[in-house]
Structure formats: structure tokens, C-alpha cells
Length: 237
Image 1 (cartoon, helix red, strand yellow):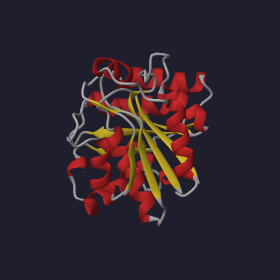
Image 2 (spheres, one colour):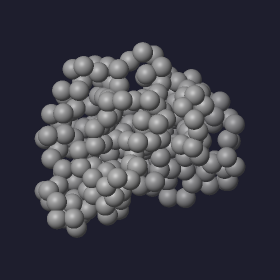
Image 3 (cartoon, helix red, strand yellow):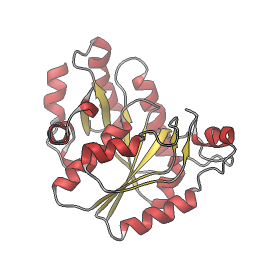
């Protein structure tokens, strides 16, 4: 039984693709996997959301989207704009614990960054991780701004006593520039450990078998893959 919270240094860094990558590798080992999305924002009813991408890429069949709001805002702001009740982190934690009783791995994918607000009291995905006593996998971008955003996120994790599962670059460009290449060493210094992975940009457009192979090469051993941070560091250096 294991629970993993996936958060990002902000929106658009590849949290959903990393979530799918962790899930597909766990399923490849024969593990039962469930994925929970407490709040989906920026997607209208009937449109494909993040969990649809996870289902398509990883083949996970046990998924739960607790709330959906059409506006591309933080969950609290999107609920307010829609005139709907906000996400209940207590209810989310209860569901995740129940799923953990019958699944080897439960992945919780956050919305936006670690401190995006989910309700008017200021609840965040960090609070949910604390309720669940789970490790937190941080997905970061690369290039300009990435180091500062990662530093802020990791500082909050440490301040709140949350356990870092690793730092993954969610969208590594096919032709990285000097900004992206220089980011790698800085991110590892901030995390005080090697990168836990780097997935190539565009991985979300692959078929399931090809995606599983990319996930295997793009995630480190602690996440079920074969990613070699030293080799990656040498390649991009």
C-alpha cells in the first residue's frame, strides 16, 4: 500500500504526464493503481480532462475526479466563479485512504502548484499530503524561472515537514538550450539529490506502448524506471 501526491512548481509543467508515467510503470509491475484528481479546472463538462489522458496513456481504470470547474483558475477561485462548493480535502483524504486498502498505489494529482488554494480557508495540496502522510513528487519545468519556482516549492515542502519523493522535469525539450541545460545541476543542488527523472516534451501524444517505454527510460529506479541521472547530466552538460 502506497500513496503518492504529485504536484508541480506551477501550471503546465507536465504533472499529468508524470502521473501517467508513474502509473504505467506500476501497472507494468502488476500493481493495482488508482488515480485521484481532487479538482479539475479549466475544463468544461463533457470535455476530456487530465484523468482521460492518464487513462489513455497508462490504462488505469480506477480514477476519480472529485470536482470540475470550467474556469482555468485555482480550485477555490474556480469554485467561487461557478457558484459551486469547493473541494473538501477531508473527503478527498477519506477516499484516498479507502482506495489504498485495495490498490498497491494511489496517485493524487494536484492542480497548479503546491500552494494553490482549494477552498476559502486556504487548504492546499500540501495539506492533503500532510493528512495522508504521503510523499510528494514535484514536477518542474526547465529553463528560465524553473530554478526559482523549484526552490520555492521545495522550501515549502521542507517547512511543512513533507517528504520529497523526488524532482522530475516534466517536459524536457528535444533541443534544449543553454538555459535548460544549466537548470539540471541547479535543480539537483536544490533537491540535494539526483533528478528522479526527465520526460521528453510531447510524450503525451504517444500511444500506450511507446509511452510506457518513454516512461521507463524517463523515470528513475525509485519510480520504477531506468533513468540514469548521471548519464543525463553528462549528456546535457
